[in-house]
Amino acid sequence: MTSTVDAPPDASPPEIPELEGKTTVGDRVFRALAVAAGSLIMIALAAVFIFLAIEGAPGFTADEQHYDGKGSFIGLVVPLVFGTTYAAVLALLIAVPFAIGIALFVSHYAPRRVAKPLGFVIDLLAAVPSVVFGLWGGLALGPYIRPLHEWLHNTLGFLPFFDGQPSATGRTLLTASIVLAIMILPIITALCREIFSQTPTLHEEAALALGATRWEMIRYAVFPYARSGMVSAIMLGLGRALGETMAVAMVLSSSPIIVLDIITSDNPRTIAAHIAQNYKETTPEKVAVLIACGLVLFAFTFGVNALARWIVGRGERKQAA
Amino acid sequence: MATSIDVSDVHIYYGDFKAVEGVNMTVKARSVTAFIGPSGCGKSTFLRTLNRMHEVIPGARVEGKIMLQGTDMYAPEVDPVAVRRQVGMVFQRPNPFPTMSIYDNVLAGNRLNSKRMSKSEADDIVEKSLRGANLWNEVKDRLNRPGMGLSGGQQQRLCIARAIAVEPQVLLMDEPCSALDPISTAAIEDLIHELKTTYTIVIVTHNMQQAARVSDETGFFNLKAAGQPGHLVEFNSTKKMFTNPDNEATEAYISGRFG
Image (cartoon, rainbow over all chains, first blue to last red; front, side):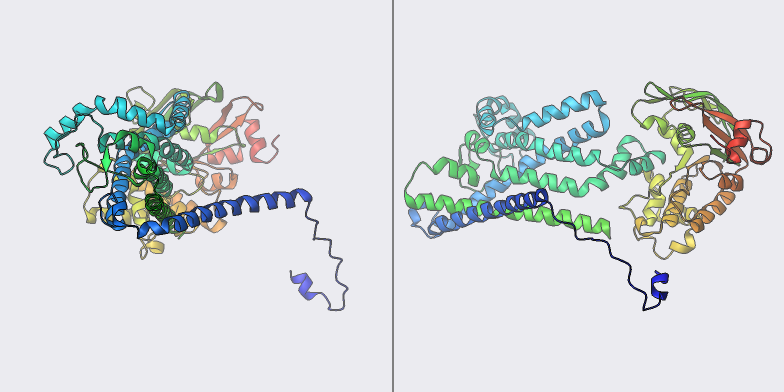
């Protein structure tokens, strides 16, 4: 640096080598493809939103008779949002401990020759069509876990979740939530496993060298590192549970009501199940109401995902600070 | 509280590959023992067997006896976790826990096993350990800031404070200065001199001047040939190693005529 500053001003500048290379054709093609792919997803999302908004708009203010006896759109959609959230949260409560446990087992406990096949099997769960899960939940799982319903009622009946008369068929929100939990298990497990296995060895060894047991090492090194990733994994699972249709529609006999009880035959309905069970009654007004419900679901899942992004981003900013 | 380590006929493996063979030595209590040697000669691997960190790597195993306070630390009934509480370790790259404050980093080892301690006890341990690591004056006003906010040299001293907070018998250091600038290195070397009055210290270093400066005894590791296991060539007092070593290979390595 100094030598250039000290150089006499009249010295002719050294020849500058050609820096501007030509962009190659491959570069330009790839760039165009990437931009197109990126824009397409935005266009698709916007198109879905516009369709829902235009087609659903009449559904907000349709005639009273189209709201399943609930009087107004709000009267119908609030119980549905409640049912959607309730079922999804219950599914999360069941799935998350299993998912984290399985992910930890695969990434940190299992011998490698067990871990690989196990991870593969978990991923396979994601490939089972949801109709099959719904069928299995309604026909096989429900009757099978009826004793569990009765046990919950008898031992924990003082809680508002279990105080009603247990359903005779087992086709309850509890059963539906278990089916939902199994469906969202693979995605949460796969993401958590991936994050856990990326924990820097340096941090793991820091904990181990201090005399940490394996579980203490996981608490000191793995969980802090993986926290924001775990949140986004859980939120993705939640997003999937919110929108899942068949499992709930096929397991439950439901209606748009708000009840906390999860073991009786009176069950809240989710938005997706509501749409699936009613779209056959095609009067234009009814369809508009259903599409409006879909718009609410769209906005709701969008909000959940945005919240997840925000939480993850906050975690990252905190670590960077 | 310091203790010696007796190593007899230790062979170290990664799966089927034998990394180090036939090591015998006695690490003296309250002294600094340095391991030198070319890259890949197994000196870090050997260091990691002294607190059973070697076996953390899948497939890694150790044969032979390493006696600590009269017990073979590789005996089947010995819990590696208990060994590591007695034999602390400082790594090549500073590795404070990123989400913890300076204060919590120092106490990390003490809080393991859900040990309960009062606030004043904890404060005492933090101050004593940070003073022990010559870091107290630099960080005493920001104990609740994240440990990652410190400079590399400070982070490494924080790691030393964390290691000595649990009052181990032995402190292992795996090239503790290789990621640090000369000033931070000098600070750590001074610290090693102070720590050896209390602890048995074993240090691996690539820097022969450093070995000469800080250690009382030196072990020279070497490979017979590429792909062969590393072995301990010579183990002697540092003074003898650097002036009049018994082994020709040692002299060649130390004087730079290595090859």
